[in-house]
Length: 81
Image 1: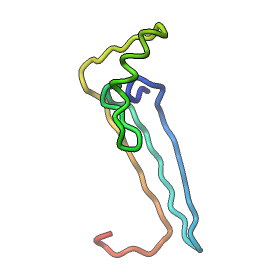
Image 2 (image 1 turned 90 degrees about the horizontal axis):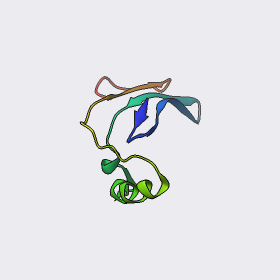
Image 3 (image 1 turned 90 degrees about the vertical axis):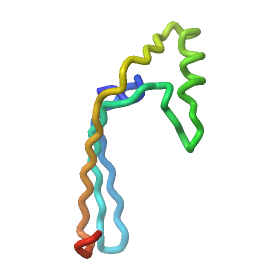
Image 4 (image 1 turned 60 degrees about the vertical axis):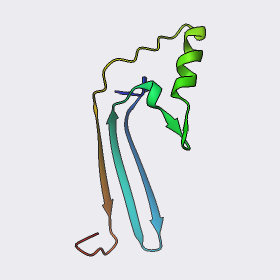
């Protein structure tokens, strides 16, 4: 699994608020490094310039892949939520 040419894969997280819990399961395998952004700052281009200096490849092949998110909660929701 690869995310923006970094190690990716599957991850989980959950939070409890009062008596309710929300959980998330994410399976990711997508992206090009030059599109990587953190906190709205596009750092992918900067990484592509720096990584060859460290001996790493900056292959920007075709976009492909997928991301699957599963949300679960014990909270009471309306049908439109």
